[in-house]
Picture 1 (cartoon, rainbow, N blue to C red):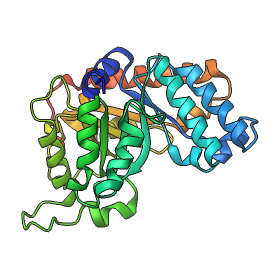
Picture 2: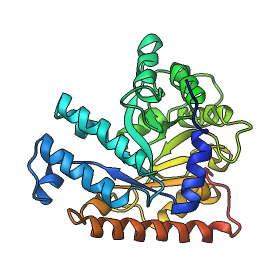
Picture 3: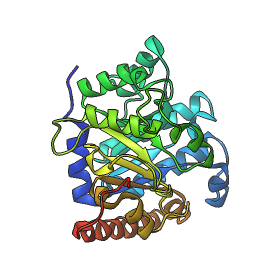
Length: 294
């Protein structure tokens, strides 16, 4: 296997160049209709191709949501593979939102499917779930490290149901929350990595930052922050949640940008406007701030 340059290095360079925006590619049925497209695999392909045409090579990353492709069966998965390949060919990093998590040989198979450069489904990074135990992620962490790809580990999501697991106390008697334990293990994976590690965390931009129990500025890797834009998180919310970790945040926005389609020029202009706003937000974060995760 010929390894790529580490994902964290590539992402840091891309965020610095284009701004810290990750554009979601979420072909909801309603969005296809709004764009005047049929809710079938042909509409799906036109939708995804238009988004890549609009933002490919102009934003730090894109994030296809696998489920919206998988619902069309094998034809949809084929479109997903072509979408990933087109975005990467345009010079844009792809974070595939699949939220995979399992144990043993099954986890290894997921790793082979998405993190091996020889696989047709290879992406620069994927989202993974640690709730079978952080150690269950080892096959994916190891292959990502070997191939130069990355993983974003679900840590603190903004859906109300997540709190009963993520904010529960860990079983080791430390008094820390499960989320804090996961974040600490991510930080351990990133020790010594420069300029940024390749193991990231998913932390919702709309979460309540009180009681996290972990300083996100010490994570050592990127923070994928869904919820920016149409899902309710404003620039000030992002500043409040992430504080001194703001420079590591890759903000994900989907509907706020996708609703501007199907005109690719309007999509592009909207994405660049959001990216510029985020860049301004981050550059203003150099002022002294309290550590995040207070």
